Image 1: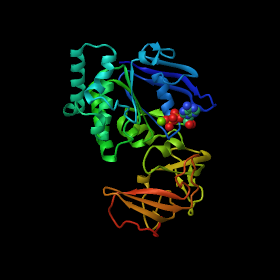
Image 2: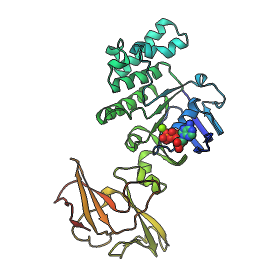
Image 3: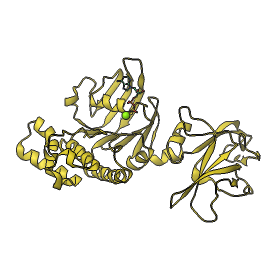
Image 4: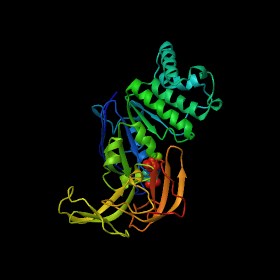
Length: 355
Ligand code: ADP
Ligand code: MG
């Protein structure tokens, strides 16, 4: 097992694309770190540089105590698990899992022991004689993981390993991955575009955008204290509602709100006057037909869509506040905000006015 360090790592492709920009990331031995960000932000490139499948333009990658920039991929002692499983179709499950050990000329008995142990950990014991085309997607992904496990590598590199599975299986496999990591304790760098995976799987999460890491922290830290509007909107579903506002001598106002009285926050930011971004999580709105009396930011709006999800209900409403557009996001921001309601009282219906 080993720690991983990206030290100012940059990737510029031949066509000039700057895919990863000065990546700095310290992953201690045994950690499960998630690299999350929208499609095209540079996640796979970062992983491929670590695996040795892509040249590093600038900076250093350190695995354990050695710089691996110039180490051959086969000598890096990392195991990569891909989204598309990359199994050998003509080999049985057993042979697929045994392959990396046989390549290293491991003794037959040890190969058998390694494969059995991994198969047991992953619940593949009954399937060892099958070929990949006789397996479900989830089982195939398990075989791919098994093949990585038998090698006992210094680190696992996983590139969206669950994204080809259906929602139910994805949830189940998330649990299994967490269990596997608890059992093996192998340093893992896990790449995904899915913020739910990021929030549930890792002990720490690095949020990436346009090749640049925006923030690294525990899931709840990102949720409670996002470093910028991008992180605020990327982590959490539905996204945080972010709007423009102003702090004027201890009073907070939202730009464009109808009753612009604002709310007194002078205790928290005494005497301050400046433009600010105001972020409100869907669960922090209180929906009502009339403005709440007293000290609360109030927005008037019209209900557009109501999603009843069982345990909770999401209400989307159109409003007049000046919402913040996070460039490159095409999610209708600026028109509707989301509010989360956990039942009790009458639910708003489309067309209702809320305040
Ligand atoms: P992600 O995995 O986060 O979706 P990638 O690392 O695959 O992102 O890609 C990051 C950026 O680099 C994208 O703009 C992508 O188009 C570009 N890119 C990826 N591979 C190449 C390549 N071989 N040549 C040029 N540009 C590439
Ligand atoms: Mg990718």
